[in-house]
Image (cartoon, rainbow, N blue to C red; front, top):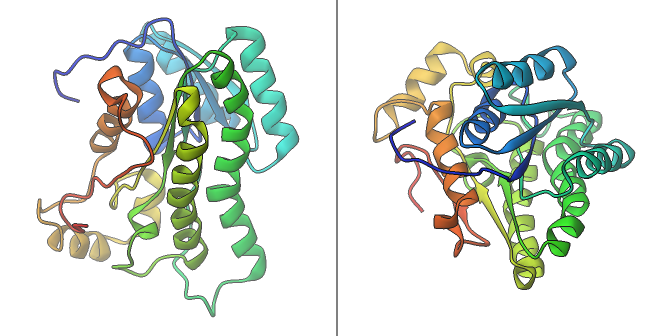
Length: 255
């Protein structure tokens, strides 16, 4: 991260899928800027480690086991967060991903349902759970992690992932329209290919080199490239942004 300073002291943030990757980077950055961060994930070991890492660095963080595709799990987690913190200022719907490049013909119905639920239903459930508290406090920020795969198709990918991420961008606009009068902004981030553990496992070295060569800045993204967008959207400087999708992709795709 650069020298720009943000201050989220006194604010409560919830970041889903924050045990690793972009979500973990966002959680660490929010905590480093003073927020009380609640990490939601199904990976208990990595989730607890991420929270402990934040605490060891002097930040405030806790981990909650939450399956963001299951309404009861989401409801219980957000009730626990509100019981502890009393408010939710920032929600980052980051949980998602895919683990195998397929064609539509190769995609099973079970894979379709699982990937769409993880990437799109989770945004619906968590946003619905957080919105009442944000309405009550007359303000809040919802930041949804979409993908460049939901904007265009430039490389082999996962059909349900692309469809779900396009849905994330559309749902972000719908939520922005519905919640704006309550002082709540809703925006999305559509990262280009980013060097997370999951992406490095899905994209082989040759593919990553091809993507880098096709990117105007000559490299794939790093987690830090995406974190800055989230901090901006959560900050006072981003207060007049809503219903928008930021696309940090190094110039590989220019809308």
